[in-house]
Length: 320
Image (cartoon, rainbow, N blue to C red; front, side, top):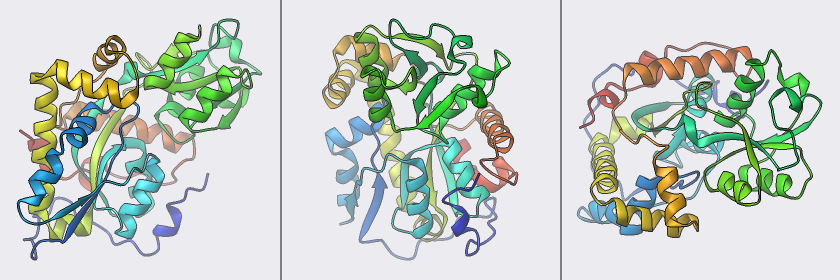
């Protein structure tokens, strides 16, 4: 399966992530950070709603831009092109695909682990089991953690994607299609799954026991080499946001509920699904390797990379 990153391979340089970070060459006029709040990225919501990121960089006269880029593929393309400095929330699968195809993407921290936040769902009168999906239409975003969940759920019943009609749709479109009865099932996450549940829908399978998804914070390699202090500054603010969620839970839930347009009860329920520790662990590396195995088997990538050496910077393991 060809990916949009293949065009980057011809111009990408071979990286050595274990090398020391170069000293910064002055300060950038601006830092561009992707802003992704869905499915339930509470630290990012807190960071944006409180203005803590802008305040931290304003101390040195650096402007912060927060474009909303929800597609992992587009984030990696923007990182490779240099139009995005930091991917604030990036799926581990997207980072692997990009690096395997030559994009200079570097993981500098973990963002979350959230297996219980991903679902295969149907309406009340729709399919009730994975086996009953055979011959049915399933909507969801391809090349993502939700794609991986569907494959894993089918495999657990000795089935493959060939047993269903799989239509590529982003989360809002997949939810709308399911609620309108245009598809039999959908792979959903976050408030999209809550909306279907509120409409009487049901969970056919969740990620628990099937996948171990890891989202990450990634940067443009050239930006890291030139401005390591600004990457460290961003990570310090991110850690502050994670601490805010832990120490000011009620306020964080209020901000997240307002952003996602859900109830406080639903926000509290969803928060329990997430581990926002920014420190990369050996378990995270194992999970990313499992993601890579899935993508190789699914022909989403054609070559294997060394996750620890080729993709993850040592600083990712030494977050406070």
